[in-house]
Amino acid sequence: MIEAALRSGRAHRECVFEVFGRRLPGDRRYGVLAGTGRVLEAIGRFRFGAAELDWLSQQRVVDDATLAFLADYRFTGSIEGYREGELYFPGSPLMTVRGSFAEAVVLETVILSILNADSAVATAAARMVSAADCRSIAEMGSRRTGEASAVSSARAAYIAGFSATSNLEAGRRWGIPTMGTAAHAFTLLHDSEEEAFRAQVDSLGPGTTLLVDTYDVRRGVETAVRVAGPELGAVRLDSGDLPTLVREVRAQLDELGATQTRITVTNDLDEHSIAALRGAPVDSFGVGTAVVTGAGAPAAGFVYKLVARREQGSSGDWTPVAKASSGKVGRGGTKRGARLIGADGIARAEHVIIDDDHDGMPEAGFTGIEPRALTVPLMIDGEPDPAALGAAGVRAAREHRASAIAELPPEAFRLGRGEPVLPTVYR
Image (cartoon, rainbow, N blue to C red; front, side, top):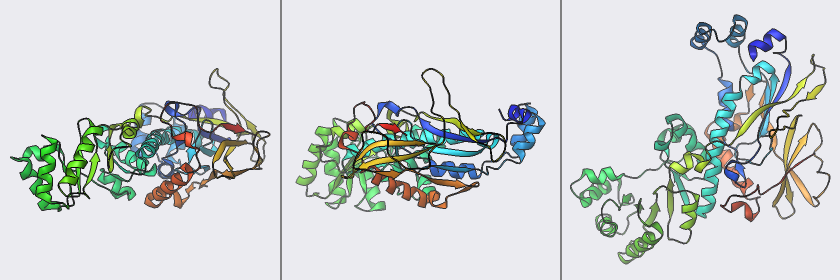
C-alpha cells in the first residue's frame, strides 16, 4: 500500500485511522481496554533497521523509493483515545491515529496485535475478579501461552484486578507483585511428603504455602500443620471436587488449630468455576490457561480503519470515509467517546460524538445525565504521554479500571452470554 501510494502521490495525504470493535468478544457485557501503554512504547521504537531493509530489498517486497521511506521512518503524528484500563463497548473509538497515510497505515499490525491480545486477557480477567468477590487472584498462565505473551498477559491481568503473577519477568519489567508455590515435582523429589514439607519450611519459613494434594489430601493437611505448626501460611489444592474438598480442609485446619491458615485453589479455574466456589471458604485463587487465552475469546476483535482524509493541502477540508461492505458497514468521521453517568453514579450509555467540537447530549432518551469524557491525548507529534508508560502507567491503568468498573450497573457482572450492558449512542 505504501509503495502504491507513493507512486500515486497520495502517501503523504493527512489521514485519521480509528481502532474500534464491532462487538464484544464472546458476547460479554463489557470490555476492558489494555495494552495502550505497550502500544505507545512500541510506536516510539518502531524502526526499520539494516537487517529488515536488506531482507525487503533481497526479497523484492518493495521498490527502492519505498525502502528509502522506510529507512527514514519515524511516526510524527498524534494519537488520542481511551485511557488504558477504561471500559469499552461496540463502536467505542478506542484509539485515533492522525498522520500521513504512509506513516499511519504501517502501524496497523503492531497496534492491533497488542490491543487485541491484551484487551482479551483483561476482559476475561475482569470477569474472574468479579466472580472472586473481593478474594485475591494470582495469574499463573505462563506455561499456556508464548514466552512474550506470558509477560504481557500478566500485565493485562494485573490491570484488570489480579493481585499478583507467577511471571518474574512481568514483575521486573512492570512492577507487578509476584508470587509462587511449589509444584508436585518438589514433593515427588523427596522420599516422603513430610521430608518435602520440612525442606520447604526450613527454606521459606512457616508462612509458606504447602501443596497438600500430591497423595492423600487429609493426610497432607495433617502433615503440613505438624511440620509448619499452626502458623502455616496456606495450603494449596490443585485437584478434586473443590467445593466439597475446600470445606473439608477448612474444618480440618480449624480442628488442628491452624485457624489462620489460608486455602488457595488452582486446578484449571475460570470465571464460572470461581463463581461456583463463591460460598466456599477459599481465600485466594490461581488462574492459568483461562486468563491468558481470554477464557475462550483470545482476541478482542478490534479493527483499524481509515475514517477521514484531508483534501490535498494542509488547509483542505476533511472528508469522512467508511467501509460499506455488507455486515461491516462503518461510520466515517473523527470520533470522541463519553460515558453518560446518572445522578446515582451509574453509567447509562456509551456516547460516541462524530465530527463535533461540542460534548452535547444525544437527541433523546437521556435526562439528568452527566457525560464523562473518555478520549484523552496519548501521543503528540510522535511523543507519548509519559504518564501512560512503564510501571507507573500500569498502576494508573489498574486504578482507572477499578473506578470505571464501579460505574457499571449490577447486571454487567452476570457471567452468561448477553448484550452489552450499555447501549452505544451516536451524535
